[in-house]
Image (tube, rainbow, N blue to C red; front, top):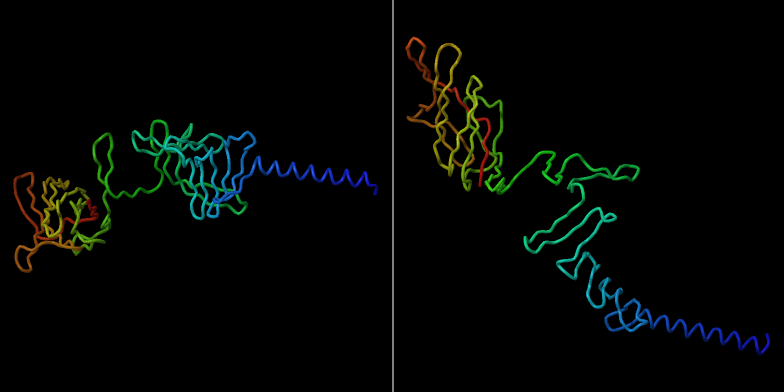
Length: 277
C-alpha cells in the first residue's frame, strides 16, 4: 500500500469518526438521568425518548406523553385533555373534566365482552357483554346488580336472590342463603296451592312477621282467601304459631249461595326471596 493510499484511508476513517461523533451529539445525550434520544441538531428538543434505569418515557420537550415501567403503562400522561386513539382512529379514549368521566368511544358502538383464543390463534368474542350504542344500551347474558340503578332519574335498586325454588312445598321451613339482618326490605314471591302468584314486601325484615294472603276465585263458584303468617328470623322463614302447636295458616271461602267454610292447612308458600340493601 502506498503512502498516499494509507493517508486517504486514515483521513476517511477520521471523517467517519467525526461524523459519528456529530450524529451522537445531535441525536443522543447521556446525562445523570439516563439517555435521551431526539433531534438536537438545531438546539431545540421536540419529540424525544428518555431511557432511564427504571423505565422508558416518550416526551415532547420535557413533558412526558407516555411512560413504561415494570408493571405500569401510562398513556396520555401529560394532560387530562389528551386523547388516546386506537385501531387506526376507530376507537378513542378521552377524559371529560366537566362530568369527571372517562369515555371509551367509537363511531358505531362500544362493546365490553369476554373473548377466547381459538386453536388457529384468532380471537373470538363471546355473545355475552354490554354494547353502548348511539341511542341505547344492549346487555346480553345474565345481569347481577349490587347497589342502585337510576332509570330516567327514578332509582331502581338491585336486589339479591336469597332463595329460589319454584317447586317449594306448601309446608316446611325455608332457609335463606344469607341472614335477613342488614337488609332494608325483602320481596317475597308467593304461590298458592292452585298456582296463583303474588308478592309481599317486608321492610326491615329480620325478626318480622309477614302476612301472605291471596284472594282468588277457584272456578267452583267460590271466592277463597288463602292465608299464612310467616316469621322471618335470621336465615329462616317458617310458619308462625298463634298457640303452641297451632300454626297461622289456612283458607276461608264463600260460595255463590252465600254458604261459608274454612280449612286449616297449608295453601300458600314462598318460592323466591329477593333482598334489597
